[in-house]
Length: 138
Image (cartoon, rainbow, N blue to C red; front, top):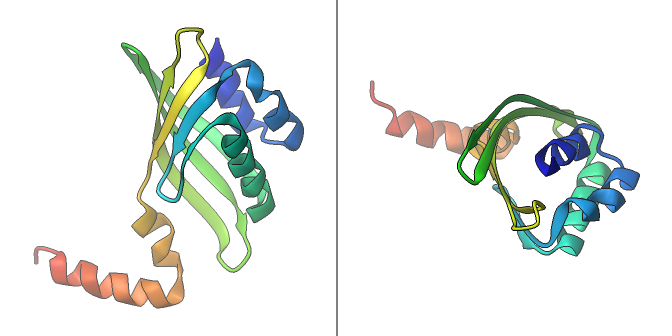
């Protein structure tokens, strides 16, 4: 099944795995996360290669899978080391949709970039902490 192969792509992320994903990823795949919104297999591969450049020792683990109609939902944990940020952990969800041939045509990630990324940046952490405090119910 394409979703299982696709999950393996992330779990075993490597340049070789990225180059083999054409077999189960649609040529016009759309990938969206808090930082990217790309369409097409070449930009998708470029994004994955950039991830390998930016994140040292990446680890991706799917903890839950749920299917509802034409969409598969994945709950996952992504870990790695990012220069300037140190060890980084993101917990998120993905919506995966298939095309008529059973290939991945859409991957939309949902995760809290504020808490899991921006709050790790010293200057933004102070500003966002102040904003968060102002918006909280006491």
